[in-house]
Amino acid sequence: MSLAEQMDTVTEDTAGTVDRHATTETFDSTDPGSGALVGVFPVHDADAVQETVDRARPAARQWAELGWDGRRQRLTAYRGYLARRLNELADLVHRENGKPHADAILEITLAIDHLAWAGAHARKTLGSRKVSAGMLAANHAAYLEYQPLGVIGVIGPWNYPVFTPMGSIAYALAAGNAVVFKPSEYTPAIGAWLAAAWRAAVPDCEDAFQVVTGFGETGAALCRAGVDKLAFTGSAPTGRKVMAACAETLTPVLMELGGKDAMIVDDDADVVAAADAAVWGAMSNGGQTCIGIERAYATSAVYDRFVAEVTAQVQKLRPGSDDEASYGPMTMASQTGIVRRHVHEATSAGGRVVRGEADPSLFPGEHYLAPTVLLDVPEDNVAIREETFGPTLTITKVRDAEEALELTNTSAHGLGGAVFSKSKERGLDLARRMRSGMTSVNSVLTFASIPALPFGGVGESGFGRIHGEDGLKEFTRAKAITRQRVALPVNLMSFSRPASATDALARVMGMIHGRHR
Ligand code: NAD
Image (cartoon, rainbow, N blue to C red; front, top):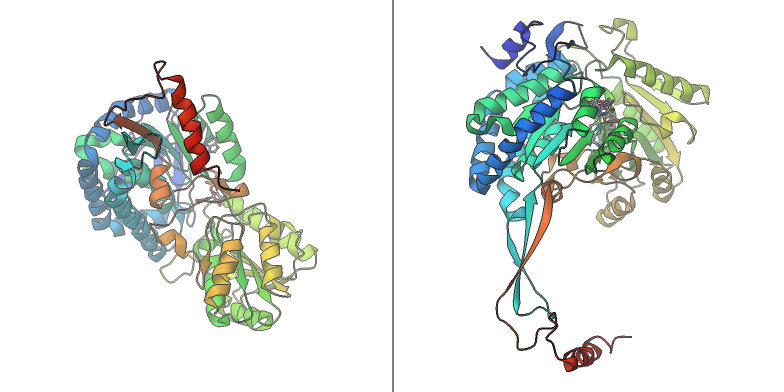
């Protein structure tokens, strides 16, 4: 029986494929499109979480002792397993998260690519290397290596339930840690599937990746369970609670939080390409994308053409649950109200709505939102300032790209962003000066699909990095080692050193550094 079929057969007694521990309370996971039951899962309490972390400890040691080759071989087996069951997992993602099957395929594909990169680059990035010992310690050899932390707690969101947590899980495992993952309460079946897949693909170290399920309290218990680092992806308000809980035990944290990403469309931009990218960046996944484009700033030279092109493209979009749908329902029902409030506040403040021609009464349910483009929204409006996380896009006319950059950078968030310009120099210059962790020029979201590039934000969007070499190092501690190669006649760090030695040292320093003014 496939893992997805097992999910359909769970009862209150079996509580899915997740270890129930002594927990008796359960919760349901449902299809956000149809309301159908996807699975029943335990609400793991603090004891269950602690048991899981305790079980991960010896697994972390065993996993670390496997070495680079042993871990790489098993990570390869895991990605092979995922790739062979790509359609099965995509079907589960479609049912539990609501996104179209094709988008689920794309998401899982990216996650597999990151797994491959992390496994292949761990040794080169983290393994022991010799560094220059410098003049003062020239008789020593100096070594640097990055050692695993132990057990990493990962708390994830629901919007990209495979790709987003895998950005922490894959890199933490590749760096030699064990992982305990608490998926969102909206996507526990996907988290349970990923852990069951690990057990099937890596049976000789199955406790290196485990899952606990539940709501915020289960996540809070994971923060307090003595993990060696907590990688959190979610909203800023929850991030603050996670940091506060982790502060109690001085547990270090990685914060991947929300965004309000902007696109700058410069005078010389390819307007059709920019509009296509803006519509995808804003509306794909129903706008429930942390690095989704929520604001566009177009210069007065291109504004009219850009608005016309975006409007034309948006009219072709249709939310739904079928294979032809552009995007699915709002995964979290309560988000529907937030999106509607932002649109209402924008229009109350004088904003104009350019909506597609689709008639919302034809949508399959109330949680399917029409793509909505908002013009002339004041900069101090919530629709410009706060994360909307729905299929909306504001377009604002600006004098030039400098004004666009200024408005982009006034946001408290700073996750990603995009620039459209035909000039390579100008595009890169604007990208560099954009206050965000990632910017793509002449495309959207591309940085997330390049495993070698670090992913993370500034300001309210969080700190720390997943992906790339920085993402591997995030789950390690740097270890410095020196080895004396030859003893010098005079040892400066000994009570036996002659008084003249430091006088000579002072003269040498004067000759080498003292000439610089
Ligand atoms: P959320 O903050 O509501 O929940 C995230 C996770 O935290 C869930 O698993 C939840 O159960 C858990 N949680 C809730 N309260 C907790 C507590 N007190 N202690 C510990 N854990 C707790 O976020 P969400 O609605 O699941 O996800 C959407 C948000 O995630 C958006 O803001 C989005 O921008 C952000 N996001 C960021 C990135 C990124 O990489 N920066 C990626 C995806 C999503």
